[in-house]
Length: 154
Image (cartoon, rainbow, N blue to C red; front, side, top):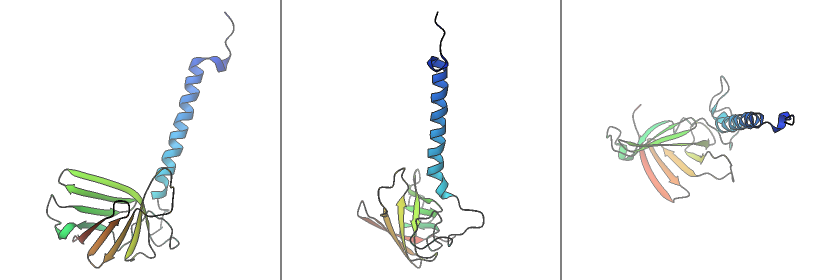
């Protein structure tokens, strides 16, 4: 029997391949989630105007419902927070849109939202959101849909 070299051993190859795969996965996860973390003491105002950032602007933060039906379990509702927003179409139909916001100041009336992807092909937003008092309009640029929501009491 010929002496086997270490790099020809199947178990060594499997071990090395697994190690490389784990490192690659950890790097991808870090790239995907790292943008949501704020340094200690940072606020939504610690950025340059026009940057895509994770913190939700103060004017948009919170829960919004169609026609202000905040107590109705089956009303369309969105909840904006850092790193994206959740939506509810009905009592059992929930979803989450992970992404970043772009706005000029924390009380901005016009906010752009971009879905987070592994590859960002452009700097264009996926939705444009306008806030006027307790009314919010969300325009989906891809779908061409426009939805109006009323702010729910905190």
